[in-house]
Length: 570
Image (cartoon, helix red, strand yellow):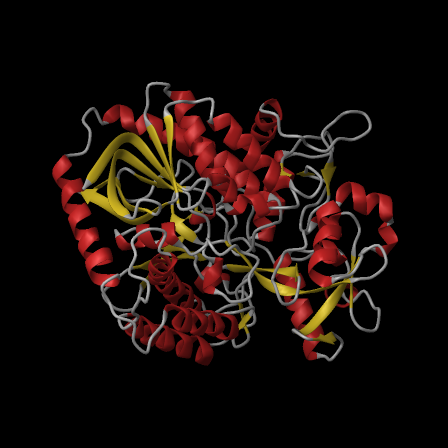
C-alpha cells in the first residue's frame, strides 16, 4: 500500500487541467500539486483541437456581441451571467498564452489573426494554422514545467474519489506501469478529464474520452447537468470520424450534395456554411433522407469543397486538413471535395459546477468539457471550448488555491487507507479476478455505442429513447458478467477498458434519461415527436442524480440577465 498527500490533486493533463495547475501554482508558490493523467499529458485530447479559440480582440467586436452569439448559439439554455464572465476573460487568456510562447498565426501587420467560425457574427477566432490544440497544449505543458511544485503522475488511472466527512479529500488510482493501487490524498481535487464521446461509436473523440471524471463525480453525489445536449459536428471523415475543422468553412469552404448544390441555401440562407453545428448536422441528415447524398463504402456522405480557396490558402491556413484528406481518404482537397458526414464531437453537459469550478461536494472541482458551468447551453459555438478550458481552468486554479488556505490540516490517513483497501478489493480481487465468460468488454461496449448512435443521436423520439434506457439498464446487468483474459497488473489495458466501460455505462444512462425527459427540441437536442422549443416548460437545466437504479432527473432554472429568449434565427 502506498500513499501520497498534496494540497491539490488535478485529474487530467489537457488544457483545462494544466491551466488549473499553473494558476494554482501562480496563486500560491508554496502549494504542492499532484497532476494525475491516465496518459502522458501531451497525448491528452486537447492536442486534436484544430480550428481556434475565441476572444474579443478587435475594434469591430465587443463583449456583448460575443455573449449574444454564445447565448443565441446555446438556444438560450446558457446561464447568461456565466457567459458574460467568460467572454470578458477570454482576451487575457489568449494574450497570456502569447506571452508564454504560443505561435498564433498573424496578419501582415503583425497582429494576431482571427478567422470566422460558425454562429459567430464577426471574425473572432484566434488560430495557429489548423493545429491550435497542439500548440496550446505544448505551450501549457512547457509552462507547467517551470513550477517544481507541480508533480506529475503520468499513466495513473483514477478509479474513485475519496470522500471523508462529506468533503472530497483525494483519489485512488492504478499506477499502470507499476501495477499497483495508490491513494493520493489532497485538500482539494480538480476533475479535468474531458468529455465522454466514446459512449458513441462514430465520434471525433480519442479513445481516452470515456467520461471518467463525470462518472467519478456522479458517484459521490454531484449531479450531471444537461447531459442530453450532445454536439454532433457536421464535417467528420466517413469510416474514421476524424474531424475536419470548422476552420475549413471559416476560410470559405462550401458544403455540397451529389448534385453539386450548396444545399445550405435550403436550410440557412443567411449563414450558409457558417451556421451553428446543430443546424448543419441536421441539414446533412435531411439531405441524406432526400436522396441527395453520395454513397460510399461507409454509407452516405456529403462533400466539403475547398477547391476554390486555392493551394496557397489551403497550405497556409489549413495544412492539417490537406494532410488528413490525403492520408485517410486518399485525395487532395486542392483538386477534389472531401467526403464528410456528422459525428459526435462534444458534450455541452457535464459535472454541475460554477464559474470557480465548485461543485456541491466541498473540495471537489470540475473544469473543461468534464464540467457544465454552463456557457454552452444546448449548442456550443466552435472555438469557445478551448477558451472555456483556459478561462475556467485559470479561475478554478485560483479558487482551489484559496480553498486550501481554509484547510490547515491535511486529510486523515484513515480515510485514504480505507478507500485504498476498498478499491484494491473491488478492482484487483473483484474485476481482475473474474474469469472470462460469454460477456466481453468489447461486446458490451460496441452494443452501447451503436445503441447511442441509433437511438440517442441527432434526431430522437420518445419510443426509441425509452427503449434505449431499458437496453442500457440490461447492459449494466450484463456488465457484471464481463470477465478478463489478462490477469497481469502491469499495463493491463483490458482492465482499464473494463473500468472505462463501467464509467461509460453510468454516463450513457444519464444522457438517455435526460433526453427522454426533455420533451421539446432545443439546440442539439432534436425530438421528432416534439419539434418545437418549449420555453414555458423547458427553459431549465436538467440535473441527473445517481441512484441504485435509473438516474433521478430533476431541473434547475436558467439564469437570464439582459437577453430575453427569442426564436433563434440566422
